[in-house]
Image (tube, rainbow, N blue to C red; front, side, top):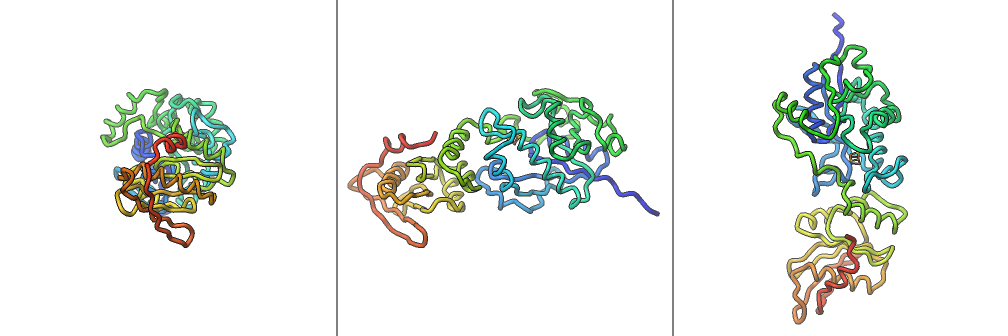
Length: 337
Ligand code: SF4
């Protein structure tokens, strides 16, 4: 007997409540459900790098989630978003279109029939007006094949609804910024382990915007690692070609050690101190200034004690000692806040 296969949906998951509910709603309708988490340098836990997760299957609440690193494509839209930035460095419209385009590309390889997201009408200022949602759907190439189960009853019926793969009455008509209805749904699905609503996207943070604007105003060929490093440590600008990043704590130090950025790696070897990376333009006074700044953030208390640095520059390693004052004024002048 020729039994028709079950329909399958790819659910874009961010780990937030709305996407957790979407996974559950889709499962309840009887569909095969696969979660997709698109990773970039900015949307994963702080001290992880995309390569730690990419290509891995993880499971969440009984759902299988596939992690895929799209940092490269993201960097391109981040640097020149067609629809501009939101209030900080968040290119939300381009971001949504990219995520959905990538999901569309994955449909065949996962044997899936359509895509679902946890988007809610009216929840976000930039991307969740219904006209913008419609435009995003069209631009992504998913027209008709993108279901937003939490708000579906407020939107035009999709192909999965028209073809009876999903019943409209199993979907919801939630809108706005409140979470009351989502929390009620969470208890209906016995979902209790979900993150708080705020937090959210790093790109919407004002401090991140400052670092990002500093980067774009001083560099032309910006790489993924130029952006990745913005998440860690303290940043100091010496000139358009010279910048220092000083680890703020042990976790920052460990992560910075893993990032290939800059042309100098500096460690403090005779006392507790930060690990630092530097893009150095070979002016010796900038390197001296950098060492005085690093001294400030180490256990160094000044002469007659000496602080010893291990400096890796290309394939050379130098050990340099410094006796003097740790420099607070210099660090405050050059820090990118
Ligand atoms: S808030 Fe961040 S993740 Fe969400 S759409 Fe905007 S840029 Fe993308």
